[in-house]
Image (cartoon, rainbow, N blue to C red; front, side, top):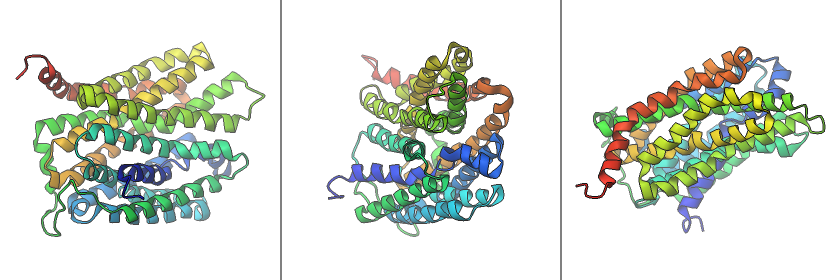
Amino acid sequence: MLRRHPVGTIVLAQLFGTSLWFSPNSAADSLVAAWQLSSAQIGQITSATQLGFILGTLVLATTGLADRFPASRIFAIASLLGAVFNAGFAFLATGVESALAFRFAVGVCLAGIYPLGMKMVIAWTHGGAGSTLGLLVAMLTLGSALPHAVRAAGGGLSWQGVVLSSSLLALLGGLAIRWLGDGPHLPRSGPRSVRWGAALRAFGNPQFRASAFGYFGHMWELYAFWTLVPFLVADVVNGAHLEALDPTRTTSALAFGVIGIGALGCVAAGHLSRRFGSPPVAAVALAVSGLMCLLYPLLRPLGPSVCIIALLVWGMAVIADSAQFSAVSAQMCPPEFVGGALAIQNSIGFLITVFAITLVTSAFTGAGSAVAWYLLPGPIAGLLFFWPLVRSTLGARRPGAA
């Protein structure tokens, strides 16, 4: 049954596996109360996950492990270990120090889920990578938002229960991928055919560099925004004085909506990429999300309805370009290095997120909604680096072009 619908199996497993990513953020208010944390310390816990992911992707890329061994095996093992470390965070962490260690370990495991999921999608599809990867990143988006939905629906469910639900989902996803196995459309490298650092050759291609640097600008904004979403939504909910509603459940439900609506953006971008190509679609999405960085603080005084609509637009655009950058990057490097090249692109991108998350969570208490302006340099820089590739794509599609 799973082999009859391989892409569906992969994207569902990606949804379940990546629910590990933001499981603590969905219970940020409970953690703040239980451990007396600040917004900056919540940012540190999120950054620990990012740092673990960076280490994991660097190991996969520089050792060639991402291309030496079956992606399905790495995905399944990473899902199992990630579920275990995530459960350790729920049961054994007693404060920031222990929380950082468990979340770092979860991040390492996520490196075996997200980039390898992209490789598996490419291996199971023939053409249309931008559209299919859009579906995969849509599941990453829903997976990141899923703990907020569990919190909103769970009523009195403890924060530990919310976190543990992600562990259970990751286990199910890993089992499904182990059963599915690897696809036929990428050559499998032998144990000795990929040398240390071979994936770095991809950066010698100017088009790969343009895509990678566009992706880096996108990453400055994306995860910092997702980290901020509960704080931005809580700010709107508390300012609206909605006494008839439970503020915790309302905030969680709206946070799920703001992050989760990005899945629609990913799917829409994937479909548009079939007609217009991945580079123009990625550029438009990045421009829209950058515009929301600029406008949101100016819209905040206009009331909660305007703010929620703005956050939903922002949430849809902020992730829509991600799969398109990955699709372009995958097209611009040799097939035998796809796993490693995407892993090292991810590792650099996620290193950038650590600085962005640290900056915005430290500044939020004083800056409030104006912290959105701290994210604006990412989309601007990304568009500047990516534009030559967009221009060449548009030129190639112009009637009469060679």
